[in-house]
Length: 465
Image (cartoon, rainbow, N blue to C red; front, side, top):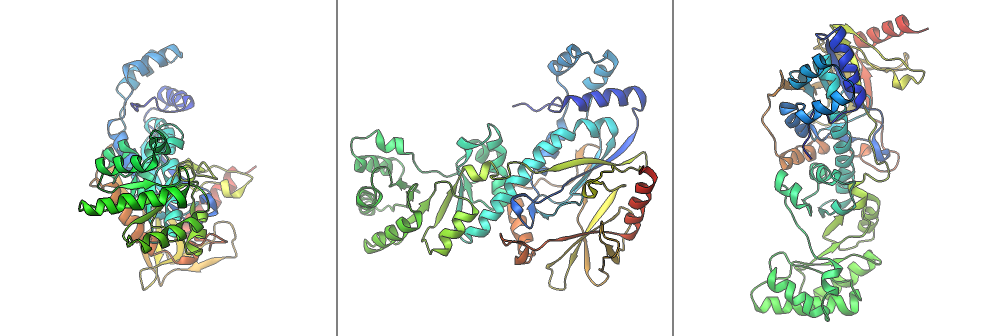
């Protein structure tokens, strides 16, 4: 799909036309953040930034877009403006792959209000989805420990969302993907085995294995559960493995795709080892997620590679991240959005976020949101409870928002998906384990500087009825 500036909601363009006619030169600051970690997790993994920056550098309306909008009744002078539309703003962002938490700015857009409004839907669409999938992948990685992870969810993904899911999964810690196009475009290692239909197309399972091994001797994985895993598939795979040894080759692995995976993996490992095939790896698939893999590990299942599909690429069970994009400043004047639900009251002004690090370089468990001009924050105040505060003067403050785009052009070197993944894994090591556990994870503290809190409270009083 060719992404143009029309990849947006209609109301963004409708608002942009009003801006164009009334205040075309207004300067806005918008914050991107989300309100809840997905999957009841204690953290999230930020993903999608590089895709957003790449699209924004060349974003424009096509002639067919303009023609369509003309049919929708937009005025000619506004359409002439859109024909020359380019994003020329600035973006400040957390690093892609970083560990992030709810209710703190992850990315800020500073631009002409028309430009900032038109890119909202595109930005939310990409960042919300990829952050959701990267977080799911990270949780699966935590369960699998040193196990190898294969993304094989394209066929179950939400249409072309599978393309971006494969990228996000790699950022979250997956080792390879079955998705050829994503592997090609993002330089992700690709891998795959075979389908049951391949074996069914032969009169004999053994001959199917022999032909496959002959044509694909490198990294050959045989699917052994088409008929009977222990009585047919496994013995035939062993026969082929021994034949490969005579040719100076080695069978890479066997795959289990149904049944009691823990039981079958143990039986398969024992039989392979008895046949002096300890080097043959066991691959498991079939509706895996972080909880199933955790259970398999706890049962001592000798599985080397986990193939994960549906539950990964659909972000099951949450399916969506509740990321939002809120105006925080207009023409150097702070703005706020109020709500009866206090967690939905936005924070005003352009901001910086500081992460507290202890003497060992570990995350202390607190991020402080401050005004952009603040360089020294010694006290972090609870966002909603005036009786609670935290002295953070003794911690190292790591600024998290860095400028990544200036006047519509990327200013940081492009990082590969695997480089982002390595960075993400390093950051996760700085996060204490109590935030990673699946049951009742520790809640990461998000607080406000005194100046920011006072500014927010002043605006609340000003606008509250």
